[in-house]
Amino acid sequence: MEIKILAYIVTFIISSGISALGIMLAYQLYQQNKKPIFTTLLYQQIFLFSFLFYGVWGNISLRLVIADLNISDALSAKLAVFIPIIGIPFMVVSWFMLLKFANNSNGRRFTKTFIFSFFPTFVVLAFALVFLIQKGYILVPQNAADLFVVRILVLLNLVVYMFFLLPYFRKTKEVGLLKETGLDKKTVLIIFAGTVLYSGVMFFFNRFGYISTCISLIILFACNLLLPAIIRLKNQTTLENENMDFQSFCTFYEISKREAEIIQEICSGKSNKAIAEKLFITLQTVKDHNHRIYTKTGVKSRVQLANLVREKTGEN
Image (cartoon, rainbow, N blue to C red; front, side, top):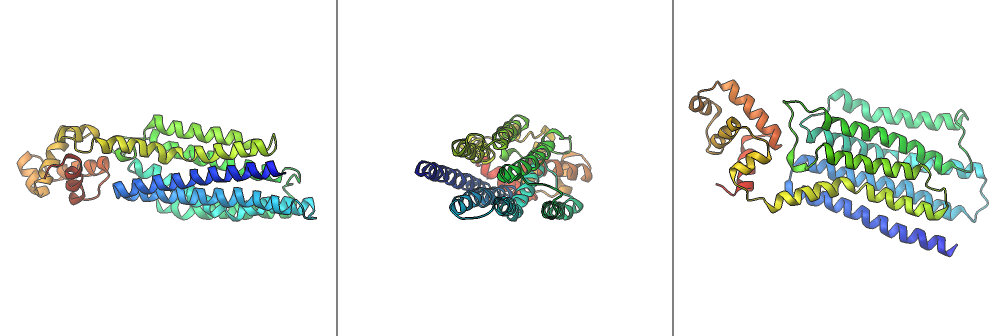
């Protein structure tokens, strides 16, 4: 029993360190870039690890406490189900932030219909699950209640991560990838592979008792660190080369020759009308180029664009 408790303590310390690291990396990214998309990533990490601590360690702590109490198997099974379900709002918010991050990093925005239907959908699913369990329509195995809950959450999580992949494989000419995230098809597939790995492990987490449980939890926490860790690594490489010349800036953000000319004119303080007259193009064409430039660089205004160019190139 002492060895079991010691194993859980060590696993708790490791998972705590991983959680702190994930949140810290997301916070550093926000501090360095000061863009809303990194605020979304920070919230995603906070809510994700909040759920993992509540749902996972709360359940394990409860199990250790009631182990010596005279509680029926039926009551113990219900507690194993309902404690994680109470923490579901944290996970749902984490899923929402994850999908928002993926879409925003690809220049897309959620529709109001999606936003207003996302959370009610999961609330209805949670209440439906509780109702079906209470009425006996879904039988929770008394000897494997934990495994029952974990498998449901794992499957839902996999579905969410499949939707996380979609924006990176649905890019069009009108939608650019926000370069500061450092994510592309290859990196998001690595993140998804990590999700599949810990999903498979968690599906049979208690196969070999507390040893396999502890190993599974470390893999679970570590794989959820992949998203901020990869972005931080990519971002650090960019920061090391922050004082790039203007040509390198255009290459990095995939700026066309015409868009580069417009950026230079914007940085010189010219209006859209003045730019159109100088470059012998229509005002609407200038506005169209502006929109594509904003999408590629992740800015929302001429001032932000000029500041970005100045920060990256060191030019005034």
